[in-house]
Picture 1 (cartoon, rainbow, N blue to C red):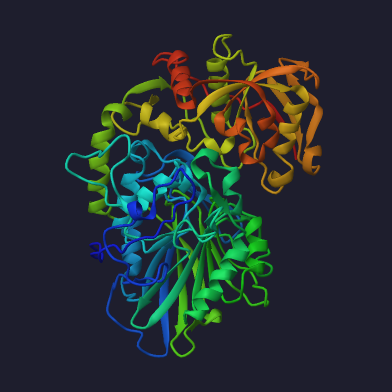
Picture 2: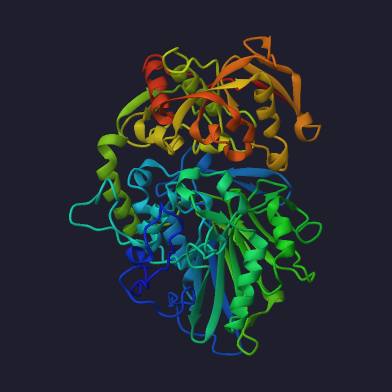
Length: 609
C-alpha cells in the first residue's frame, strides 16, 4: 500500500541552551505553529474505512525504538531474533529487519484501522551504518518521514553530534560544514516532532524541544510525552550537550501528564528512552508470568511503578530488548510497557480502547504484542529507491576493501567478552603502542561502541570474506578519537570494578580488553567483589597498584563515559587517530585473501557463573 501523503510540517520549537546553540529564530521551521507549543494536532494516516463513531473507539498504536539508522537489513546477529516455542525450547529466526520491510509491515498493519498512530521511543539516529551515518543521518530522517512516523522521543544517540545537529534533524537545512549532499536538494528535516520533556536549559529551565504532542482525529485526542534517560549526559560526548540538563524521568512525565489533563487530554502515552531486561531473550517471552511484570527487571520497572496513573501506556527502548509487559502503576492497576528490540527487527502493535465520554483509555482493554519484521513480504518500493539513491552516493567510499576474515566475527549481546571486542581492542593497542603514538601497554574498549558484527557473507559484489570500509564503519560508526593516558594499577582495577558496580551493577558494561591483559570475573558475587583483584595481570605479571600504566582508549571512555568515572582521573593524555582508522588499518595489515583474519578466541576474561 502506498504511503499516505503528509500534511505540511508545522514549526518545531527548539530553545537555545547555552552558547553552543543557535537562536530560536534561526531554528524554527517556515510553517506557522498550529497551536500552542507542544499542543499540535496530528492528522493521523486515515488508513482503511472510517469507523469507530460509537462511544468506544479502538486506536491502533504502532511503535518501535532504537532503529539506529539501520536502513538496510542488518546482518549477522544484528539481523536475528529468538522465538520461544510452546514447549519451552527456542529457535532462531534469521533475516529480519530492514526499513524496506518495516515500511511494508507497518502499512499492512494500518489497513482497516482509521485511528492509527505510529510512535517511537528514541535512538532513531546515531551509531548508524555508513549509508546513513556518512550523511549525518539525513537518509534515516527521510525514511522515517516516508514511514509516516507521527512522533518520537529523543534518545541518548540523538545527541551524538550535539544539540545543534539535533535541531537540524528537526528543522532541516544543509550540514553546516559539509553542505548539501545532493545537488539542488536541501534537507527538509523531520515531518514528525522530536519530544524531549526532560532535556532543559540549565539556566532557564525551559525544554530544549517540545515536551509533548497531541494527536487528534475526529475528536479522539491522545497526548504523548517524550523523555530520554536521565543518565544521557553520562553516555554522550559532553561537548555537544553543554548547557543542557537531563531531568528525572518520572518527575518529568508526571509533570506534563498534569499539563495535558488541564488541557482536557486524558489519554496519555509516555515515550521513554529507558528500558528493562526481560528474563528471556526471546521476543515473544511472557514477562507477565507468573504475575504482571514479574519477568522483567532493570530501570523501567521502578519508573513504571512510579509514573502517574494518568499515563495509560509506556513505549520504551534503550536496552535493545523485546517485551510487552503489564507493570502495575502506583494505584496497582495494570499498564502496558513495551519495547521492540532494535534495528527495525520488530514493531509493537498496541490497541488502546478510547472512551469518547470519559476521553480516557479503558485500561482493561489494552492489548500489546511484538511482531517480527520478516523479509518474506514485498519490500516497499519508495524505501528501496531511497536506499539505492544514498548507496550510490556512498559507494566510492563504502565499497573499498579494507581486509579479509575467515568466518563471522560476532558481537553477541549476551556475552561479556566478544570476539569482535578482542579484535577492536587489539587494533587500538597496536595503533597506540609505538612510543611516538602514545606508548600504550594495553587497550580498553567500551562494549556499547561496537554496533554490529563482521559477517563473512558478502553484502555486495565484494565477495565472501572481504571486509569493506562500509562494513567496518557499521561496526565503529562514532569515529571517536583514540587517546593514550597514564593510569595507576589501582585506578585500572577500579575501572574493572566499575564495570559491575554502581550504575553498572544491574546491567554490567564489560570493557573489551587487548591481548595480554587477563583477569577473572566472578558473577556469583555482587558489586565490585565480582572482580577477582589478584587475578588481574598484564602479560602474565600481576598488576601493581602503585605502578603507572599507559592505557589506550577512546575519548568517550577517557572522559568517564558509561559510568567509568575513575578513567577521568588519567594523566598525560595523548590524542591519536580515530578508532575507525585504527580498526581498518589493523584489518589491512593483518589479513589478505590468502590469509584471512581468524576469529579471536575470546579467552582473556575468565567468567565464573
